[in-house]
Image (cartoon, rainbow, N blue to C red; front, side):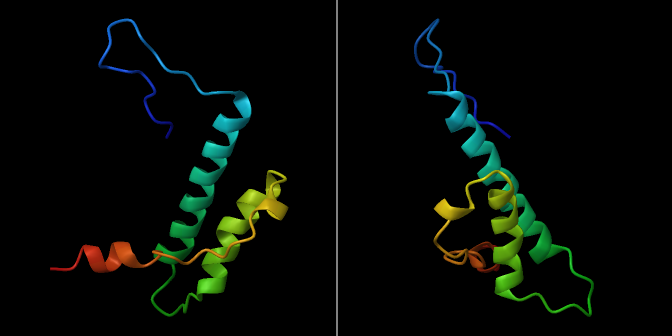
Length: 88
């Protein structure tokens, strides 16, 4: 889902994506995040999901767009924080 880039503070003012490449990068990252979360959250009750598998799910989306060589950092920082933040 793309962010609403309209500036609601000034009448008649809108913001646009800087260029098509920026928009495509944003959409690719969103799909990569979704793939990682799907891998993490949809295993059967007997599956063990390893962090490397979650990383690969995101990495494969980015690589398919041709940006694999730019994705040099592993997925991981904060990956599981949403689980702990939702606990009482």
